[in-house]
Length: 336
Ligand code: APR
Image (cartoon, rainbow, N blue to C red; front, side):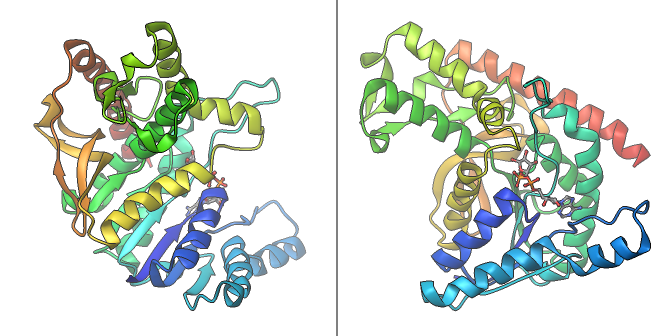
């Protein structure tokens, strides 16, 4: 159990995180920071006064706290409109940002299109962490995932083991789910990993996909596997298209908690993580999804997989897409 976990962004994912942290008793205290509802300077002064008194973070936390006697949990839960609620946190989970929402015509913006707005948000988040919990280990979920982690690194420059992004656990979970469904076996039997950037170029690694230790090709034919891999790459969008009001929230929250638990309980669990590469997989200075050992020190080691030539090329392509976005970030940050 930690003393304190801070959650930044109290939307759909942030809400699930706070509930689960309290229910699983992962820390003695959890603080949630979210400026919503935002005050619009064009609103009447009366309306602005009302909005000043409202707080999504405080409201969600009070709701959860009032349910804790039922769960017999003494975890302290509190929220704030500024970043004071995360003061002293040892672990931060960042969900602040604007998610992909379906447009009226049913299409939705790519993660990269949300870059501009989410960079501004990330600058504020970084400042909040710097002021309130500069030594915290950070798991970031906000999209575009790899670019936001890169931005947090630029703004905070933490030791590389203490900053990571959550995407691979979710993408791998989706891959496993589709494989288990197609093979008609328990999800517990499927082991698979998805590497690379958290976008359309991500790499479901077929050579590491096993059902009870047996290569997946012994259960599913080439056509089915290709369809599953394509669906995995677009799985986030599939949920966005169905929901119509935002993006996936239960599975991303649970995935981040899988990483948080590996840190809190020093599990040294191997899972895909968006981590800083310094020569591994031929990349330098980028944050890209790779398998890592996660323990009390955060990302304790990056694991080099023996990829096939095809997988190596797909990973290089994906890392190239991440690099392109990070170059855009470098330019945009000069003006923000
Ligand atoms: N600081 C803290 N919180 C902020 C800030 C900020 N500067 N700006 C916005 N937020 C808050 C919003 O007020 C909102 O409550 O972040 C929250 C985001 O919540 P949702 O819109 O419900 O989004 P959610 O589904 O939780 O996803 C959060 O994770 O998977 C990604 O693409 C997703 O980037 C998105 C993030």
